[in-house]
Image 1 (cartoon, rainbow, N blue to C red):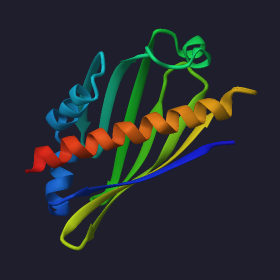
Image 2: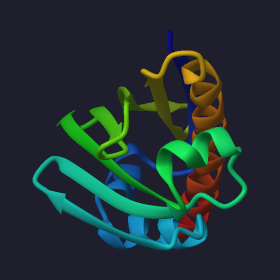
Image 3: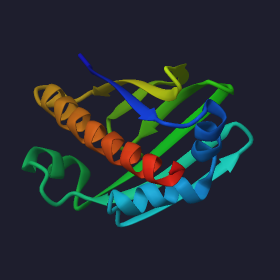
Length: 155
């Protein structure tokens, strides 16, 4: 079983401007700061963008904190295979689950849409579905914050 997250982030900028923003480690680190992570970093190596972060597990249900502990380490890797398409993989090292999907840049009505399509899978009997829904909700909030940060960055 898995949970799908599809989100469109809209930017009033050209695809080239949005692509440059997404490949800028300073932008990625600004997003991390705006998301109030405990620690984080971003790096770009060719067409691969890697964002590593540590978030507090405060406020998570006890079923989640029993699995992840007090802090959650997250590694996000985007492999941009073309100027407008990336394969996305998000992992929580050492934990039973994964998030995979794509990011695509589309131009529409003078704006650039970053379409995120992710599949959340947690392989834990009985509670996996609950954790998938929890993670999907957290992803949507994180993407909303990224979009707000991106709009400010591009203005």
